[in-house]
Image (cartoon, rainbow, N blue to C red; front, side, top):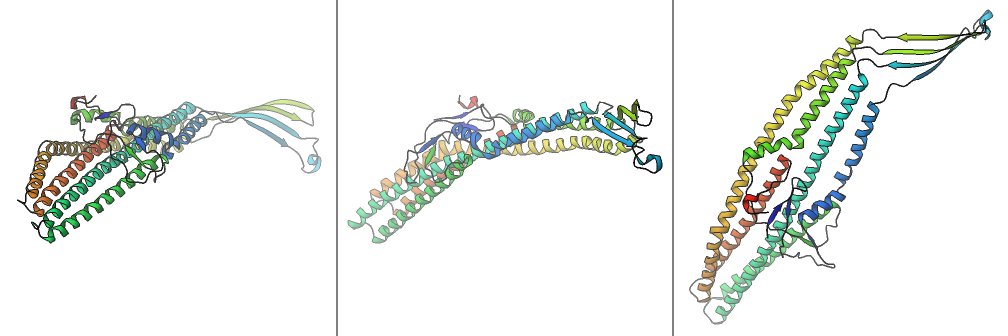
Length: 427
């Protein structure tokens, strides 16, 4: 069994292998058996947070199309010298004008407006990518929680077996008069406690499974198991390499896109200083003379430069503030990344020490204590102590492994990609 880092879906670990730890839930149908890739695929297909992104993209495309529209052409009609007094009380001396008008945008306003909308669309896409990474990371964390709960249930079942075995030994010793009845009562208590611990572990597993499947709209009360090796912990890249990878994080890439948007906004605001020209052309009917004439008009607003200045100043200030925002965000990411990398190293070291040193020693101590107890050379307390030490260390091993993988998921979210670890002997 091995843990495989996939590059198909960024951020998330892809687990393969088998862990035969069934759920304690009563099963009415064949249980689901999910790899992390299966969970991610189901989430991508069904998660409402991701499904709703299509509407945000449609809205951005609509805004981009709207920005490319030219000012509307105007049709106007005008009647003069009508419904007055005297000779002007009729339409005999009326002047009727029908014209078409348009606004000629100056200073490249349309192109700059389109540049802003296009930039906003690109920024939105990066934000949606970041949101997708958040969803995938969340599913990966839930997957690890199920994997951890499965292993914890295995430990609880082993504890129950050990307690039952110790109870059987005590019963034999009590019946033969070698041990006092109080040892039998203590063994009964330990058996009940182990049974309660198993039920608690089974409940925790059902809860973790329900939290996982509900991510894609599955039934929380369903039964199933996840597949993977919780204890495969390959080496992560060094901090310098991780720092370089952060440049591909959508949270960082967004600043480059946002900078283009704000630069385009500055140019658009500056272009507003150049006045647009309203022009119109039409035909005028002179009713008294029974003649027609062409009419041309043009108008230019005055004082546009002064009115455009505040908006341009605001756009330039927003552009200038972006550098400080980006620097602060980079510092936050690097500070968090460094701390996560140190914690991951500690979790991996703890896992290795438990696997190579503490657990083998505790296993030997438990076997020796049980042998001595069978031979009557030690007490039930000594046996329980050795068994508890072994089970506690196994629990520590599960906690260290789960902590490592959760930290890896957080690191992958910060660098915006999955982390291959061939140096750890994984393919």
